[in-house]
Length: 248
Image (tube, one colour):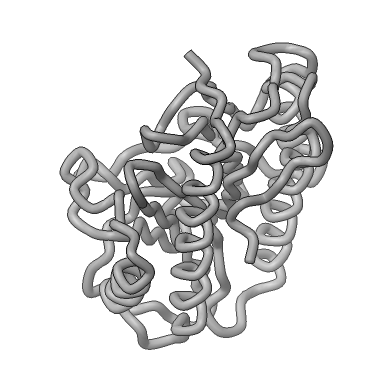
């Protein structure tokens, strides 16, 4: 069941989304060669707590950290630890926050120092695919319109969209209906209505779309070892233009 949010609920979710966006900003300031992913996780958790938010990924299905941090060929759900970021890496930060029983969620992929032209192009295409998807998040459109916009943009640039992982609705639960695949046909799927809050999150591979999960049972990587980028915003569907809640 897709839950439409009432104005008081949306106001709480705005606070969740803002906390997530600020945590991403503070972590991004610290990204540089030599920092460990565990140190970035600490910054994210400290920021969320200072803002009165609970890092809702921590403990979710026993995930051991506050932030999912994925490097290079890691697509999503990377576990922070002693790994040291190097010049030329790309690193994806995925942050979740809970305030008064509601959730916020967003992700962004950042360069570490100077990255290759190939990596820069991947990040540019993946980031723009998110905006292409968001442009379809309007009352009367369907989930398939979002999915198709992302897929067609990405594939026109020679990249692939991950099929095994999708975007989602969000609210009292971190993951709510509808599921939002990053591939699909326009005019299909649930119809969008004002009051829906969606997490649109293209996961884009430089190579083929297949992925696999590492032995830690969390970290999802590209099967062919190619680079992957992940961008996610939390978006409110309105009667007019979509509102990006996780944008500062």
